Image (cartoon, rainbow, N blue to C red; front, side, top):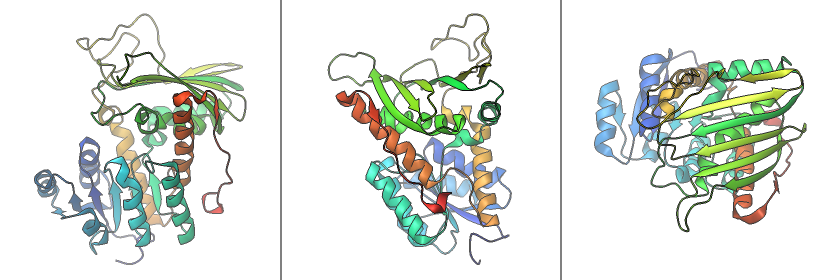
Length: 344
């Protein structure tokens, strides 16, 4: 196979990390995406990796590094734990292999910048960030309406992002750079308006307990104000909602009407029509399929067009400003940076 960025052949993918997210990506690449196949899989749980590999006709690699360097892997999808994102992506860039990287781009602000710098030095876009909301049909329609001016000038937005249960690895900080990072990416994309400042207000918990509900107030360059609630122990399920208010009206992902009560024992759908699911993989099933298909199409066409490493870095910049705010920093400015020409 020639240059993997200009091929019309089947793109042979390697997937690193097969938790719920990685396993879903394997299934999508193997079953749902034309022009793609799964060649290799790696996970620290070797037995699970071999089982899933057998299911899709792939091989199980003995390490992530072996997978990345394998001649039968044209492109790499990384769904490994956050601290591995930077080194694995840098290894892919070194070999010129297109990479779909789950968020965040790195577990530190400096790490994300190193990924950007390495890609810029290589002279072509090889990294796409896994911000799947860019592919969710509802979010795409919402953005088109907002940017198209159907509600006039945007004044405010309100976002809710709830998970049923936190992961044991969650920290006060990872609520921001691991969960709220979706809003740090999607808000400037939805509004077409960069973030300039963030202030975080955690709900009170007893000393030593996880600050599992945090509310952020985001400010944009255009003067809009955005509230974001992230709650990672909502118990009743995974729930997402966004509403944008403008000078000529308001637009929402779901049109609420009436009263809805959701508890852990309640039905999946409330009376306002918002569907509550068990996790984000289920909620964004279509978005993940469209996202991976778009990534493969970009590889075959020789031009990635999805969320870039720069987008991932800017989301990290907002996330770590939020961490500073959480630790007593009050209102923290999101540092302004010049966008490299590669991402223009």
